[in-house]
Length: 499
Image (cartoon, rainbow, N blue to C red; front, top):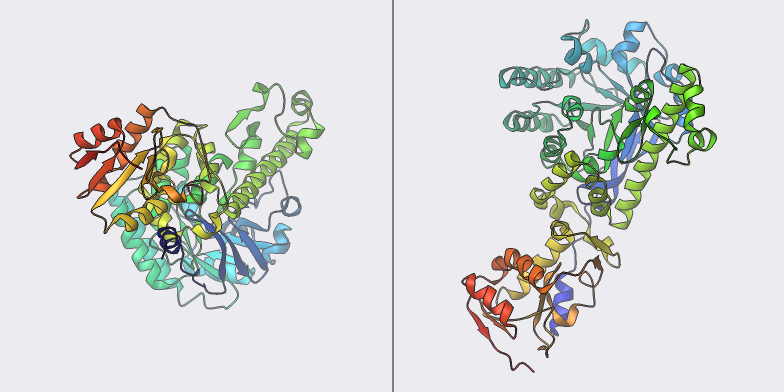
């Protein structure tokens, strides 16, 4: 068998695992996935945003939101129950799609308690035909360890109690995961919730973290939960507000998230973009071509009556949010979710700190990413940080398999201008090592990046070569590379007579 044939065989991937009918995964990238959530009212494509439909009447109706292309929306069952509503929730909200109802747990976080019970809220959600419903939990928020432990214990009791109440056959039931920033509490909560086997799991009370822009901690929580929830079970993120962080949440493992930010921002005259938001009166020209921005100038929007301006801004904010969701879905289909996340993260210091956490998520990325779809798809690498992406980690695992039995490895750095041995490995940024005869195939040839100087590449290789070369003798024709390997304690021979 040819060396190149064995290399290609190592690159073959196992078949995808089939999943139950409630949720079907179509395409994967990082921890994100393009999927279908199958409910009594139809199929919702994930990843998706669920706009919050206000009980008291917000700037947009349910039919407005459905008209923007949203298949899935959420409303507060507790507040509808308190209003005396007895109608089907689809009729009450005017949303002709998949409806999720929250139980009122957020009111517990804000007000300390609610005047209802877990049983009452569950029975009400069944009565109004919720497609996806949440048991009454006790959100953690940002609090002391002692208080957080109490919220976990109370939520577990509610989830245990609910199991005998939710077997209606129509509704998909959600188990919230509490514990907040306390990883051991989250772990115990997840263990028990998974044993109870709910249809969907949801990461509870992240809003305080997002309000403080503590995205790195939030991402850790999403990833921690996703790695402990069965793969066939969707993960919902409560209260994810802004399009700028949608792609990071999806890449870390969130399948869906809800938000009222489109309306709250509109009420404050805040104009959303995919990178942030701005007060309307600070903008000179609307940087968007949605129907709202195509119709109005900034001045014309400012001159509208308050309620109408709020409505138009809410429409714009949801247009931007939907555009970002579609961009994320396309990125997953095309194997470029990392590229999208990185571009969004580089627009904000807080998001960038969260993106840096991705180097810790290699296990999940390697386990869940579908590398087969990336064949033939190029990758954009901005700098050395971009090389933490799973395609390159996967490539290096295959290189390590190839070199594992070899006692002697020939290395030629990319900057070397002399003759190269046909069986040598090419060393350089960003691929680290690659068999020279395969540098024109995937994944090495499918990368776009800025070239480094020899000194920069040497510094890059110094951080990454040791784990691949420990215990081996290296032969190289290049004095710079030989010197660097020698300083690292690797047995290296400078041989400049390669043919």
